[in-house]
Length: 176
Image (cartoon, rainbow, N blue to C red; front, side, top):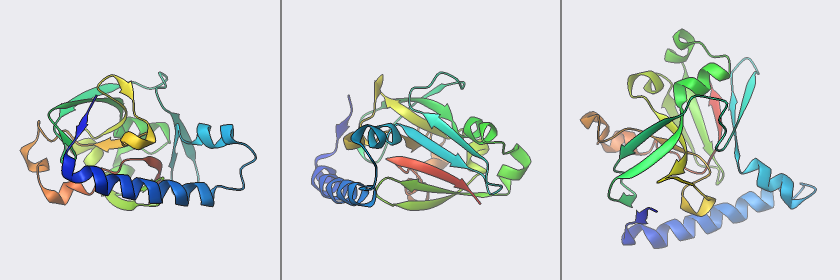
């Protein structure tokens, strides 16, 4: 289990509450709660061509990887498990040459968006994590998906320029 730094707990709780309320209001047209729940465990990766790949949390159809690293939002080393971002891009039909010249727009459940150079997937072995410390990540604990950079392995990633790229509560990746 991870431990969130105390100074972030209140801020995170407020942001999460507002984000979840917004998500629920924006998705009020769903016919049932189970449809909403299934969407919370699915990450959609969309290519500019219109092709899409749906990655389901804890799915075993793609090769998985593990990263142990510190984060700016938790205390101590955390172990993340998920699918390498470059693997998800390939599953969505994006070849490496095209990806290296593209930007990704990562969109979270609370409508947070950040642009990430797709080249990061190859240069830094970025992970799309769906587990932390051996457990699935609920929405209240950064889940269901979190973009994770291996900060401890690559000192250049221990820079605030990369921190905003750690999109948690990830729901969609768009390749532009």
